[in-house]
Amino acid sequence: MTRAAVFDVDGTLVDTNHLHVTTWWEALRQAGHRVPMHAVHRAVGLGSEDLVAHLLGDERDKDEDDRLSAAHKALYGQYFDRLPALKDAGPLLRRLHSDGWTVVLATSASGAELSALRRAIDADDVIAATASSDDVEEGKPAPEPVEHALELAGATAERSVFVGDTVWDMRAGRRAGVRCVGVLCGGIPRADLVEAGAEAVYADPAGLLASLADSPLA
Image (cartoon, rainbow, N blue to C red; front, top):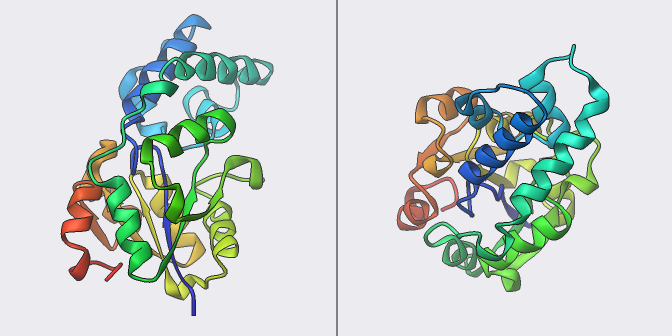
């Protein structure tokens, strides 16, 4: 039976969370919103519409959402040619593939952004599929992105593991019924990841790779 190793991308495989913080902060600043960077950081991992709602609240001018998202995309797009993969991100995916796991990405990124992230990881030969924000109606922390990734892999929740770096990832994985693994390289504290559903937590992809034999992905 198929085993699926489902991975978030931003902050999990590619070191982009703080780029998102800076570019979202700037997009909000340009629109006249004073939002502290620590609040933006805690919202990274949500889809654009949900992130804006989380930061500005339901009483905001929702007609502005698309402009904020477009401004963020334009600012973040300046980094597409130099997004840095986290240490051993590609080797981790290749090792799991060689161990018989079907590797699938589940990310809120899409289009040119997703292509840039995949170039950074440099492991397309072992990535079986990608569930992007274009494929689902609700993003994380709803379970739909993880459930769609499992459908693409042809795997059951009982035989799958989801790796991510935010509480939104852990909540989505838990709601989808999969085992969850957290990584600290996105900047979220271990205790928060565990509270949100992480069964195990590692420093980064390199740390998970080094401890693979004792991990939920053994």
